Length: 370
Ligand code: NAD
Ligand code: GLY
Image (cartoon, rainbow, N blue to C red; front, side):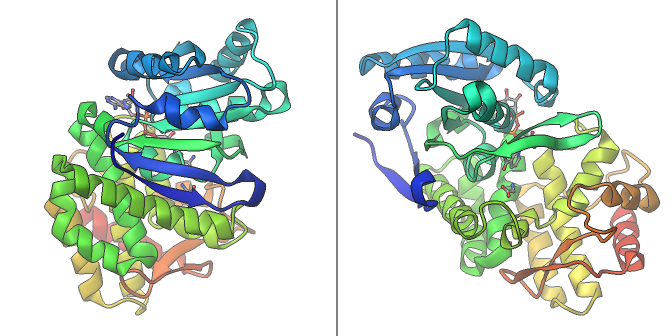
C-alpha cells in the first residue's frame, strides 16, 4: 500500500474523505469499495483523460469486483453545457443507472462539475466520487460540492450543491498534465495561503518550484494543505452564506478577465485568478488596508513560478470600463454592489461590498499599463 494523506470534510451525514498521494488511481478499487451502496459504477471522463488514465481505473475497479462502464465526453469548457448534460443523463439512463449506482468523475473541473450535477439530478440524486486529474481540480473544484454548467448568460449559472462521497487525488496523474494547466492550478494553491494561511504562503515561497517541477512530497503537502484549507471553510459555510465567499479571492477580477477573453485558451481560469489576486492586493493597498510589501511579495512569488501578474503582455488592448461591466454582471453582485475579497495582508482576507468603482477602475488601468 502506498503512502497517502487523508483530510475529512466535516459535513455531518454528508461528510467525506479526501485522499491525496501517489498511485491512488491504481488502488482506487480498495478505497472506493467501502463507500459504494452497490458494486456498480459508471465512470464519466473526457477523451484526453480517458486515453491516458481510464484503463488504470477500470483495472483497479475490476481487481476488487466493482462493475464499471464508461461515458467519454469531449474535453474542454464547452462540454459544461445543457446539451452535454442531457447527453450524459440519457446515456446514464440507457446504461440502466439505479438509485444505488455511483458515478465516478475522472477528469478536471469540467468533468467534475458536470458529473456532479448529473449525479445531483438523475433519479432525483445518486452518489458520486471525484477523481480529479488536474491540479486545479485536486485543490479546488473536486472539494466542496459545487456542481454546475454554463449557459449563454454566463458561467456556472445552473447547478446545485451535491457533495461527493469520496475524493481521490492521485499526484501521479499530474505527470501527464500540460505545464500551462499545472501552473494555472498552482494559482489556486497560492490562493489558500493568501486567504488565511500565511505560513503556507511562506512555505510555497520556498517550495513552489518543487511543487511545479513534480517533487512528490512537495506536491502532496501543497495539495493536502490546500484541501484542508478549503475543507475547513466549506464545513463552516457549505452553501456560501458568507465565509465561503473568501474562496473567491481574486475571482471578481478573474471572472471579468475570463468573460472578456471568452473563457477560452487565451486565458485559463487559474491564470486569470493569479492576475486577479494581484489586483485584489493592489486594490487593498490603494485603499490603505494592506502593506505594499505584501502585494510585492505576492507578485514576486507568482512571477517566480511563471504566472503572469498583470495585463501588459501586449496581446490585447484592455478596457477598464468593459471589465467593470463584466464585474457588474457577476452572479455574486448583490443589490447592485460588487463584493470584493480584500486583504489586510498575506493570510488576512475579508469580504467588502462598499468599494468605490473609481478605485477598482484605477487598479484595472494600472494593471493594463504596468
Ligand atoms: P478542465 O477540466 O477543462 O481540464 C483542463 C484540460 O486538461 C482538459 O483539456 C482536460 O482534458 C485535460 N486534462 C485533465 N487531466 C489531465 C491529465 N491528468 N493529463 C493530461 N490532460 C489532462 O479544466 P480544469 O482547470 O480542471 O477545471 C476548470 C473548470 O472547473 C471550470 O469549468 C471551472 O468553472 C470549474 N471550477 C469549479 C469549481 C467548483 O468549486 N466546483 C472550482 C473551481 C473551478
Ligand atoms: N471555488 C469556490 C468554492 O468552491 O466555493
